[in-house]
Length: 86
Image (cartoon, rainbow, N blue to C red; front, top):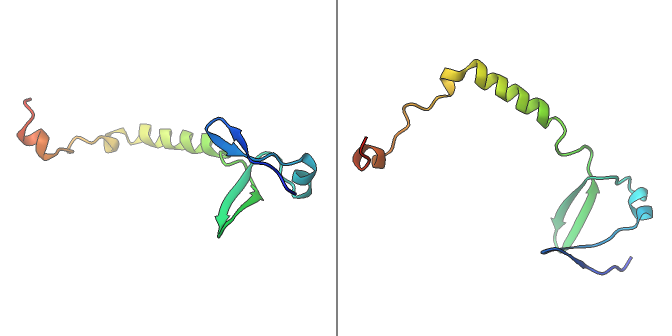
């Protein structure tokens, strides 16, 4: 299929027909790779952000449970020691 590259803001893109996307089961997300001088488009198996909310929740619980361990009290540098007036 011959198609024209279109300007989309500061980027460029192409339009693919619904029929073509249906043939390869592409719905919303794709993986895009450059191989040699070709751009390959593959259907994504999942939403790239699936699971993010749960991971952030677990991370925030870990931070809250180990609050003292997450402090960086002993971080200093030469500027702080020599140049800064406390």
